[in-house]
Image (cartoon, rainbow, N blue to C red):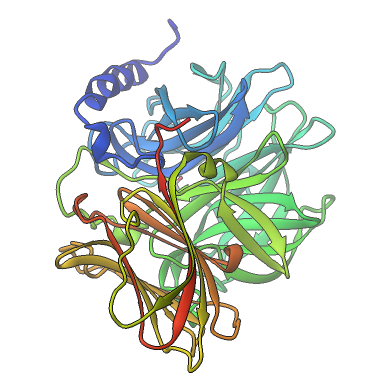
Length: 494
Ligand code: FRU
């Protein structure tokens, strides 16, 4: 421990006290929020020592973004997290202005390896480099030979100010690979591939994919993995222009299925799609579970909507639900990890429930921590609009609407209690099923995550509605019926 930096010791002492000032019931029940202060991107999502480790971009000292640390939490089930002391603090010449996003793997000798972006602004502009820290799952020591990758390792003309967010993995032969983003000579983002035999010495191995102005400007937080016989690239685009209903403007993660040429590093990408069509979803990162599932987690927030703060709070920022990914029909599907089902209590199951214009409230169907599965069908004559209200009380509610005529689902939090003029609505097109829709809505105290038609589309949004607004109601403006499976979610269960 004598190697622990002063900045890290200070952060650890601070967060231990600050955490005590945050009432547990003011936090999400089963989504990770920061131990204290501010949280953004998931980092170093990995399995180590029999548990899942999730690090996060962290400013413990206030609920605003500031010099980035790495916060640290572990979990056995990906839902109930236990905080560990902060893992990294900015202090060395190469990371004095922040320990930005990165990844983790296990070294061949069994130690846990973190790679992160160090930011140094001492010259008046950002210099971003890749750096290592090695540890035992609790304490990490920055590598003496940091930085291990610098502007000298970039292709000609690339920007040393935008070289960040390494994501690591181990190949079957024991060697390591890493993808990171960089701003190319044309000013747009690109994903670069690097390789290492031992995890400590790294070299560039190719250019995976260059933006060239197609999707936003700079890219952030790449991930690359194999799934169901395909290679999948995930990346978060900044300054996106809107494209029909699929991409809103702003900061938007996209994915592409394709084939990675392992010799050249080049990725032959198929069409790109939005990962989540909601409001609050950014910087997704994945892990491979022990039983072979590819699980994705993201920052449940959006840089453009961080102003959604109705009341001052001692914490800000939360992760999404971890989601199991699969590839079907050329698309990426996502559903909540199956571990969530273990938190289900007090089931209300009703089939063939008729709907009308009059909002239907069912006994036992209410609450702000809930898992709702619903199969909706038109009856003779059909309907033009189905409406589900939740987090409802008097003037407050958030709305999920389905317009079967357009095959469009809309999430609308205008009446969630927000006093900010930011994005409050999002829409997504769903595949046509003759007016039928299968939906799953997972509510936690400060969020709603919607999964449509078995996960072909997801819509995610934060909401800071008063906790007492816990009503749920269903209506349709024509003839429709639903099969409903409702469960209260209890993170204390089990
Ligand atoms: C993405 C991001 C990353 C960076 C980090 C800084 O949200 O901008 O590119 O590493 O956040 O906190």
